[in-house]
Image (tube, rainbow, N blue to C red):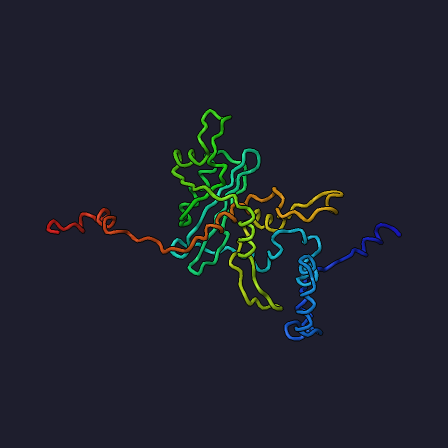
Length: 288
């Protein structure tokens, strides 16, 4: 058959994800199984089967740490983050060789959290500070956190001050030391992503959402995997209980923020002393 004739027969494939509830008489569309029977089936599945057979996820997703991350649920269009209605927490994960990672997370009055901004780039200290200061004008940043490595002295530099000290001394950016509790942080992220959906109806909304402009964060959430044994060792040993230490810079930032359990606080109003300082001559009463 000639190549020109083959061109006519291009294969077109559509992909549909469906969970087991789609085949439920009560909750699905044209379903055939009783809900009680589905629950009995689910009780027999292990965790990997739950993802592939119950939640309709592709098999290559089985090794992921955040299997409950769903673009259709968690990724949303950006909206205005006002200083009155949101507090913002900033997190920094610096690296000597890999790109530096900055993440901004907003929290509203209800405690719902939104990953609203990110920077992932190889930066000089001055560039890093410029990104942070620019967001200070844009958001009401209540706290800044950094990886513990930002507080270590670099003996290879003439100015051996830790990065956190230089950011504070030279740019007025005050970072507190974040945690290295990776297992606790990953569990907290999974909890924040958790949601409950039956058919097309979301019964329990997640605590955490991501703006679709935060492409690096979304990529990490979709690719962060459990580490595992290689070769024959995989047959003899139980699965590892830790994720791979790669492609996790925004995830580290996110986990550190969530573990601190920040809550929304109302924007501070001017105190009486501050009000006195901004009085104009017209407002001044010599007999006051």
